[in-house]
Length: 269
Image (cartoon, rainbow, N blue to C red):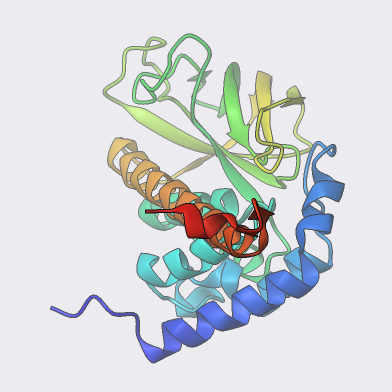
């Protein structure tokens, strides 16, 4: 069994690392920390032109049709650069959920980066019981409820909202539905939430009789579960990238920082 990255993956790693170091250095990261969302600026458009936003989108729908391993290479480099854009929420979470549900009409925009999406999953007081949503929907697709810690919601053009299927009591579980809600939909309120990590933009989303379009048919629980798995994996890989770069910086510093007339690294056993 071969655990090495392919030549293509290594080349992609080098390309993304070089691009982010030039277009999204730490000065850029610091500049967007106070903002409610990371703008669709040169850095985001450049990543899109490199194909990063369309890696998981099928070839016939404007993407590359690659695997989560390939996306993991990009996410690790994004973490290494502390890139604050909606790569995980849009190019992984939204794309995966749409693919699992068999919904294709948004894929072209997501692949090109022109459309930013996110998944509205967690609810106040419900912790990680996403499979028992208290957000409800009518048979006409009108949604009422609240979602918290929604990643990149302020930057999203479309939100995929997880709700109880029509006719199901709130929090009952067993039949979950997903609705596409446009950012400018009636009754949709997005309030940015301050977080310890300013590179991770989150918001509280309130839906007050907000119209949405149901995606797929039947119980969406397996589709959402697969999406959650990928989002968790992506977050871990992002953290690995950040930790790796932090270690490199610490080693570099230990080689040049002197105390008692010699580099502090020389004191290590």
